[in-house]
Length: 303
Image (tube, rainbow, N blue to C red; front, side, top):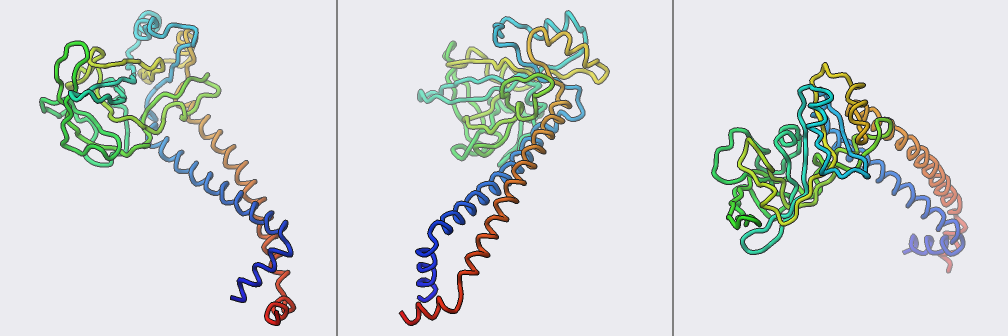
């Protein structure tokens, strides 16, 4: 009881100082939480994107004034570079089940599926040995479990296409996704990885798995950005000279360096702020301690 009286007495006598101390402590806590969250975000992003570490891979985003549907990147590369390459694509699509429910879905082409490194909650990622008659899908969140079957109604043909849940990932898990463009000087790994908040990841236009196609979707939108993978011998200068006419292009190895620089700047700035506010907080706590003296105890006890 006396401790409570002492606390109330000190606050009433030094209200501004206590409010300032509380504000400093809150700022220190917010900065510390921000740093911890940033570390987790970096780990999640690198876990997804590191699969491209040993590849001669480029991130390409067409300029906004181009109609991306009319830019055939594959044709451009065949005509002007004439080198073996693979293109990773993803699409935002909407599928409907037989009950009329609509699902927001992320569609990966074969190359994107093969170059994905996503942490599974249960089950497994797409396997080339999958041989069931159902379309394999990965569910996001807790609504579906491995083994569930969802009957999808093809919008154009009206055909029923059963999909089989082969694995699940948590809602908000980092996956390969495209987050705008950027020149080779400022694009970073943050452009290649985002938390997922849709219902499923599905194979789209696949030549390996049973899959969904454009005509199955209620709404279909191919992301204009792409990841293009060349043989290691392919010159980066040649890729830049050809693709930069049509959009922003960055080597993923350069994006990794940019990401490291950006994160270092973030940690330096926030660490300095955390140090300053921590020192101010400790100084304030020391000031509070100096206020507590025997006379205060005597006054309260006698009161």
